[in-house]
Structure formats: C-alpha cells, structure tokens
Amino acid sequence: METLYEEVAALMVKFKKVVVLSGAGISAESGIPTFRSKGGLWEKYDPAIYASFEVFRTDPSKYWKIRGEFIKNYDKYQPNQAHSALVDLEGMGIVRYVITQNIDGLHKKAGSKNVVEIHGSLREIYCLQCSKEYLAPEVPDGMPPRCNCGGVLKPNTVLFGEQLPQEALATALHESATCKIMLLIGTSAVVYPAAALPSHAKQNGARIIEVNIEKAFPEADYFIEEKAGAALPRIVAEIKLICK
Ligand code: NAD
Image (cartoon, rainbow, N blue to C red; front, side, top):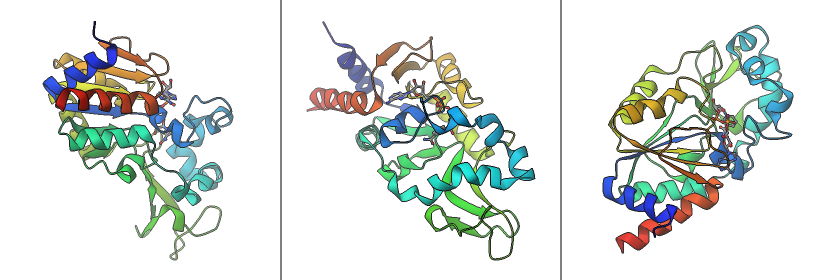
C-alpha cells in the first residue's frame, strides 16, 4: 500500500501545475513566530491593532516599535528546508507558482522565481512623502524612521485596512483557478482574501494538499500532519524516486 507521501508525490508528478499557498508556518523553522506562536510577538500585540493602517497613519512609531527590530535584523533570517524544497520543485517543473502571505521575503531569498507576495515584503521600505526606497537592514535610526526629506518610512507591506496590490491579487486568482494541485503550507487560512484561494482552486477542479502541524482547511483532499521543514524535503525525495 502507498504511503501518504508516495501518493502525494505521484499525484504531483502526474498533474504538475502545482501552485503553493504559503503562510507564516513555513517560516516558523527559520525562527520567525507565526501569529499564533506561544510567546510570539503577536500574543502580546494584537496584529489587528498594531499592524493596522489606521494606527500607522496616526502613530507610526507604534508600528515601528514592534516591527523595527525584525527589519534591522532582516539579514539574520534565512530560508529553511521547506523553502529550499520548493525551489527544487520549481526547478523540476512541478511547482508553477508560489503565492505567499508572508512578508519575510524568504521564498525569494531561497531562490524561488515565480513568487507573488500578496501582502508585500518587509525587505522594501519607502518614504510616504517622496517615495524614495530603502532596503530593510539600511533603515535610518529614529522613531519612527524618517527619510532625508523628513517623510515617514513605511515597509511595503499590506497593513490591515489597506487594499492588496491589484496585480498580485489578479495573479493569485489566476494561478488558483488554473492549477491542478494547490499545496497549502503553514497557513491557518483565516486572513481574507488569501483564505478564499484554496476554495477557489477546489471549485475549479484542483486537488488540495495541506501540510500543517494542525489541520486548518477541512476540505483538503490530503493532509500531511508534519512540520513543513520535514514534510517538503520528504515529498521531494519521493518525487526523485519516481522520476529517476
Ligand atoms: P498564522 O500565524 O495565522 O498561522 C500559521 C499556521 O502555520 C498555523 O495553521 C500553524 O498550525 C501552522 N504552523 C506552525 N508551525 C508550522 C510548521 N513548522 N510547519 C507547518 N505548519 C506550521 O499564519 P497565516 O495563515 O500566514 O496568517 C496570515 C498572516 O500572518 C499573513 O497576513 C502574514 O502576513 C502574517 N504573518 C507573516 C509572517 C511571516 O512573514 N513570516 C509571520 C507572522 C504573521
């Protein structure tokens, strides 16, 4: 009898056109807390308040006080085995696109090429006044940090209350509607509109494979209850066995 990993690998080899939807869980093993991690940042600070555009507009230092440290240490965080496995799967022609809700930039850092960061990236910082761009570790000191022109700096991420970039959303919708398999990795699938993408894919005939330490998407066809950093390399290994 086939194991779950063998079954999932065979399915991916057969259909290809796999689109990934990743969330904070894929970066947990890179040392970045998820929204729900015990003792994590977001246990102390409600993201709906601290990561809201309204609060940023009225008091940007509130946001910078909790996000500034990550941004200053941006280069310290490295992709893990799950990110690397997705680079391998893209190279094999199995993964077509990675749609990520993460703002840590780790998919691109790992080397994935077709990535759509629907919530933007903390790597890119820009001035709200003159639009000058900065890269994460080089943000000037100050609370909040300011551009030479005096304008307040803001990361290029989508805060609660802001619209998603339309082009990124269009790509995500198109990829979800046309994939054969959607691979959900480390997402609680509750933040919209990203949370609607798995159902959108399923309605258009895709099979859904979920990798998570606890089930978040009940309609998934396959559920791998495992950390992403362990599960993804194992899927790659099974695929290599089939394709050798
Ligand atoms: P979430 O925090 O709501 O859920 C994380 C999910 O990952 C949970 O279902 C959890 O069971 C699972 N998980 C935890 N560790 C895992 C592991 N090692 N392997 C596999 N699964 C694991 O995350 P979400 O669904 O992405 O929530 C959406 C919001 O969180 C997004 O808007 C995103 O921008 C933001 N966020 C991003 C980061 C990041 O960029 N790394 C970190 C925290 C929050």
